[in-house]
Image (cartoon, rainbow, N blue to C red; front, side, top):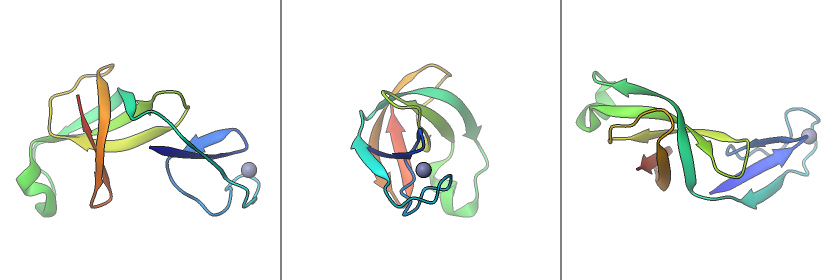
Length: 98
Ligand SMILES: [Zn+2]
């Protein structure tokens, strides 16, 4: 996946301008699809539109090779420190698997 950076801050969110200095010279680079679970929350009673997915976990993934973290989703059981891999971007959600 790609990360975007300026002023030493990296994020997976694509921006047209740096929120810190206002520059439009945002650098982008490709990083590994691997990461580790930084934190997670298991959802047993989801909002109606995600009912068919439950139970699932909303995970905060520390990406490998960058300071950026990404909020993703997985239907597998996870624990903090688990190695996970980015699968696909579906309906705006980053889907992860172990
Ligand atoms: Zn900047």
